[in-house]
Image 1 (cartoon, rainbow, N blue to C red):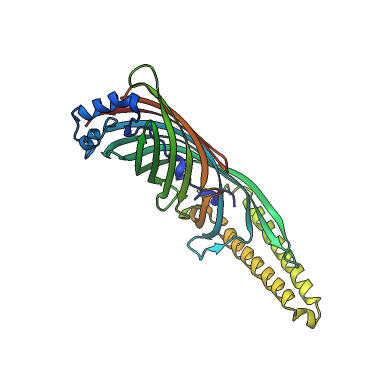
Image 2: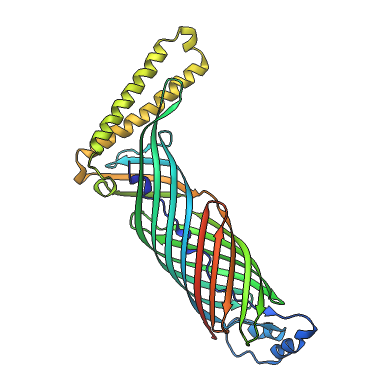
Length: 373
């Protein structure tokens, strides 16, 4: 089992929540009265956002109503994998949770995305996502068998790395408002990532609340914004797929390792049976001993069934397939983010954001151009 364990470890959330931080803002205070009055008196020239003229009449300064941005994104995150089943050549899949344990399951991804957006309403921005990415998953795992006391011992271990490319698309929206340069933004998006090895695209939902402050610079329209917030990721947990055996296994040497595993299962079964047969009738009727015996037989039966199926598939590699299913989730759904944006003018913005804490780290950088519609 080397790469089959990897074929669903897709982190579509590398799309992130990366969009230039612009918002409808209303200045406050006596010193800003002239600015407020000029905004109220100016005729709003664009069709979008809907009710834009009403918001401007209330003193809100609106960003240009449309834009396009490009982001680069990098992330590293730990994963939790469970409920994993594997089958060969269309046979019934075997759940291997009790015999396979992961000590490392870490995903890395980098992507480039393009995001067109429009302000649908003065306080609601909507956008699309189109991205290309390169990703990899590092996994370390072991195969464990029980003894008579149900103590599990590792009989096989391996580490592996798989790399793949993916294409992503999605939709998002950001309710946001600013007062006196302070702002709140609740960014959220849903995205689908298409990976060739999966039966269907991986679906991800991202929620990123941000709270920050904009500071005006001396030159007109130039400012710097800073913010803090959170980054929450939820992805569809079930991954199901099928692939040719020779694309999954490095089959050289695995025949002997499977045979060795079968011998260890047979030895473990003999030790369990010897322990059980050495008990008195009273000891065999003890519910604790019965539970230990039944549990050991169940796990060893699963290991034997899996290894026999693998051995049969390895005897005809060219025509064999592997079926798999598993549940996956990020080790931590939330992490903390800090970010900043430099606005050259109302057309161009440059942004950077860093996420950390928990088991995920990420970096986002982006450039946006805005225009009126």
